[in-house]
View 1 (cartoon, helix red, strand yellow):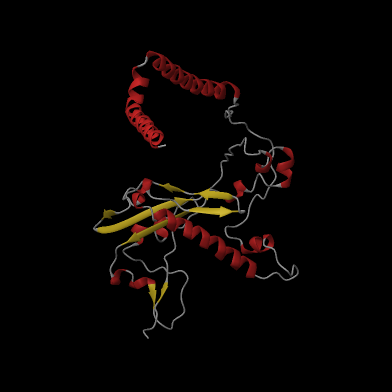
View 2 (view 1 turned 45 degrees about the vertical axis):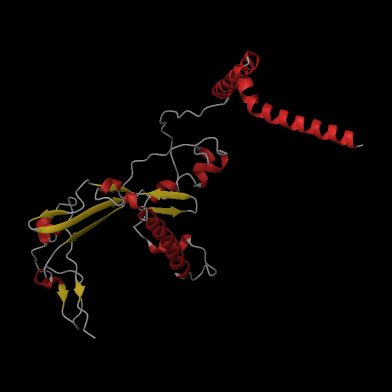
Length: 285
């Protein structure tokens, strides 16, 4: 029994030693053997061939969407004209519980909700530090969402410097143009949807189309000018006196803002220039 145990221990020891010697030599044997070398080349060639085959199949079999040329359509149906920010028209389009006597509660809540969402979207764009630039073209533009699924993206107009010095004054002049909202509502009109224009729901994420129209887009211009107190004094009404909506008091800023009759025709044949603003003086507490 003692001899058997001794022989068994010796055999186990030999096997363990042999395994330790074979382990480090195995990678060297695989790389140096011509038989394994050919196997490695065959596997590499098969992998590369498979990649090229898949790419070729996707190119030949998968359909690709190609944009066609612009095509003019026939007569469209839709609202033609309304005044800007027509509150009566907006109230009619806003749901209400009392159709006989609609109120403005729905309009107020809708305007607050839409503007709040648009404002937060604009602020999130400004959080990107890389967008903070003195170049107007690289600054983020305002966006608005209408009908819950349509995004309007504005565009900067007139490539003026953001800050310029004119006549010793620092002037910040920017103009932002907004797409005409009526164009986005054109495709949803029941008449157009049944005749010429496909609806986004019918494309099933496999197709799409662009719409182009020659329409006047609303724009907003903001101009900030460095002034002194005595220069804007004619524009400030005295405390307690009724405010005049229009004033003919000339100021040194008329040429900067194009105020008054001197600039008649600047903004159209029937334009009388821009009206001068009037500010109400606030009594000190």
